[in-house]
Length: 161
Image: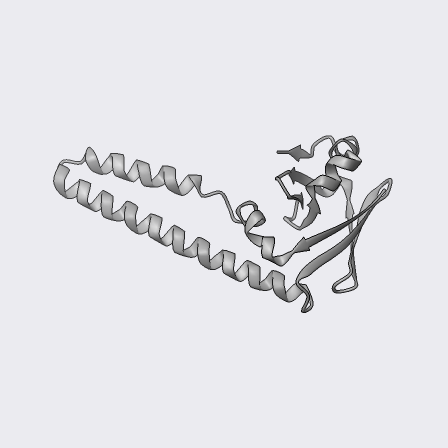
């Protein structure tokens, strides 16, 4: 089975939340710092230090996330070879899939055993490998071709969300 997919760089904001690491750990850590600061001997001083620490952590997280996203988008633009759209042909064979980028005329072969997760979203889906390489596939084409079922048959350990 072959699938041709196109990704418009202007739609980068639709997939960026799946590309940056999960930030819930930082939010939980900030909450713990706040709780521990309340239960110190010097309640007022501990609370102020805790609140300032949480504010600093959240601001640094926000700023670094914005910077990482901007760098990722710029790298992605560079990989498009001066075009506004990423055009990929993916050939799903018996033992592996072969992705061919029409922008750079490059080919990437992935074994089904190396696939880690498939993230389905409204317009675009991301297929990740164990090494965090990813392919962007239009969700409508995944649903039309029942690609999620096909990939689960090839790799039962594949996580779909």
